[in-house]
Length: 312
Image (cartoon, rainbow, N blue to C red; front, top):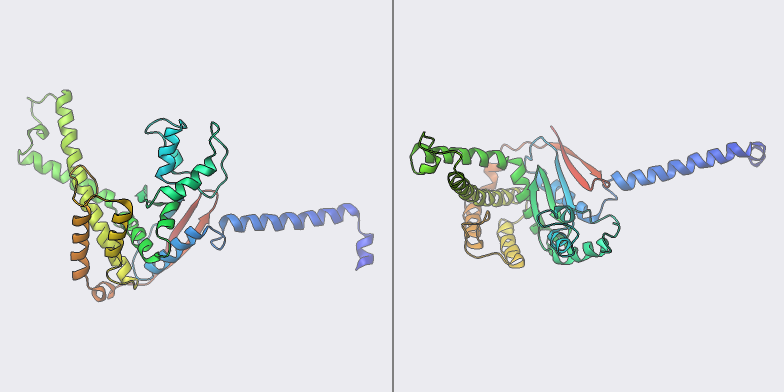
């Protein structure tokens, strides 16, 4: 073997070593960037939770992406530090917390991300069919995986049950009903109404906004109930999400009473709604017709995204 190696041309030996080395580093880098085994621990927690939820709940047939980002502290501080203009700082809220970032105007973005991890608190929302969570949420829910499951289930509900479409339809129906019943003259089309009148348009926008917030509060309580249903079906204690509501209300300092100007209900209304739901909910009836299915996970470190992909 040694004799044969000595007889080989040095260029061929070098080429062989280069190909093996390149292949090794390419494979290692590919696994790091795309394998669920090497993704950040926060994504592994999401995968574990959703695996359990999906084992006893139908999450639909479309892919659901999850993404973890810096959080609202990044947005506020970036504005204060002059890194962006007011209402234009979402870029910083959504920064990937697992990357090294260059300084901007002398500001250490990596240190800002570290501070955001400590101070952003619990944040989650469903946007464009993506479940988004701040990295700080995982710190706040440390040791409380079941509570984390409730907030994940809540955001899943908005996507799985097509909340945006349902709320848009409800809004359209409410506006039409007001017009048909002559309960809001401002919404009635007539020759006497000057459609170019700014005051008229402002009034229409005001009525629409009030209805949107009302429907938003309703949507949040429905998502609470659906999250509780998912968690109960998956084998968690019936009171898990009710206890989580109290936990997050304390941590995030929610208002006790409902503010009509808010898209979210106050703690008392929200917890009462959830209490009523779990008292009446019958897990055995819900799971009677449940059909199990399979799913895959796709992770992309470069895009900072983990995708739940049902196989139906």
